[in-house]
Length: 166
Length: 109
Length: 89
Image (tube, rainbow over all chains, first blue to last red):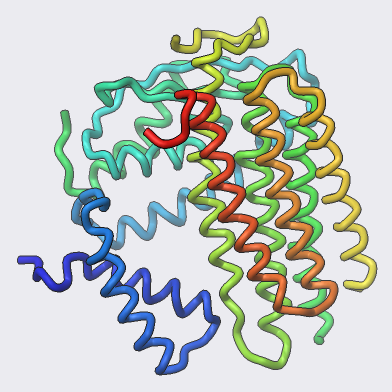
């Protein structure tokens, strides 16, 4: 079980890494200071932290991150073409996608990924977290976009994180 | 500095600047707010990412060892850009900003 | 080569900043202006990083990071103001 004096070991490591990056060094003194900050900050702000679900498949998470990064680059080339092309050919659309994810953290991850990848920006979430509305820059087929989001990003996230389906 | 590092830095710099410019062009010429939102969130973020990677390569190739702290800027931008875009889209939907006429579907109230 | 590439990139980014200023002035609505400001600070950040490469000085990193943090906080604060009419709820 989680120890009371070290509630978030992963967050501690992350903060230490960020501290080392910020100082651009690997010296022992900064490592100790970083570990201290990484230990103290989660303790001080634990009331505000949201629950992060356990990662079930770390390897799959890495592959998924690489794929998302690749998609971001492709999305940018795509958007660049649309931006520089003729304006009258654009077919923007509002698309409502039903969500299966309940967990807040995973939902936030999904909306961020959707905003950064092909031609879509997340524009709103219904109060009960069941529907997500997207704006697509160029979507001749709205159902295809919604299905793509569910297939490419929602299904892998549900598989990677330990969270319940609704 | 060896020639190939200079070449690599130049390629990343030019790519980054072109993407940042495309983002700004999108902001300038697209017809309504929701379409304009796409330029800055994607193109500009990646553009800054490219420039920051160029900076990372440049400072790492100089004498004082690896320099990775520029990564923090990229990381921060990639986390924050979707958040601000989402927020502005929500504000725009609440204010019922006009959409361009060929838009399919409707924004929420 | 960098002596030619960097001024060229500075010109491109300067043009990008000018375009966002045009959008900032033209509007027509509040969210458009906030979006233009958002783009403007990101462009300024890129310009500062580029300037740091030009002068081969590592000191500009802190300035760029501060602009990134402050710009995000500013955008979110104005966004919340547009949504709810106040910032802290």
